[in-house]
Image: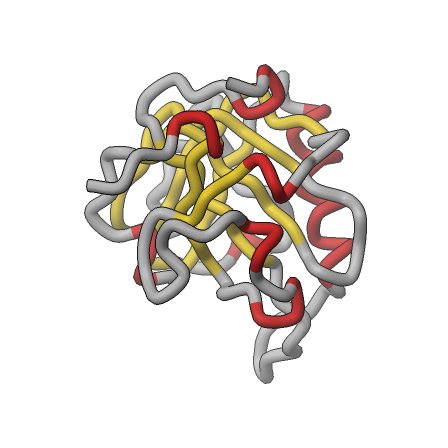
Length: 166
């Protein structure tokens, strides 16, 4: 397995697209700036980041070992190892002494799910040919086989050398 995406708690990699659609009533940051803010936060917090989100793909998952954040508009990709995950992030009730904190401004926004990440770092030398999609209509295809403009917001991957269809 690629040491840049070494899994610790599960065998799947969650590939999370950072979107480019501004939403009303919340602060909007362009995708590359979002990735940069995640990385800066992790660097200032011993490589830790609390990712919060409202994606259905995050529910009831115990097979995720790593997360890769990406945007098709930038070469910048970030990877982190999953330490823990759960439902319901309320910034007013989150333990301020926890070593996992959400980056600003997401630390002020409630969310349906949270994922605590360790060893958050820039992912260099990412080869989409080295990963296989494990669910959905693209199941079994290498990531390189689908057009990046059509990437789902969230996909589950495994390294290609570990793929075996069930």
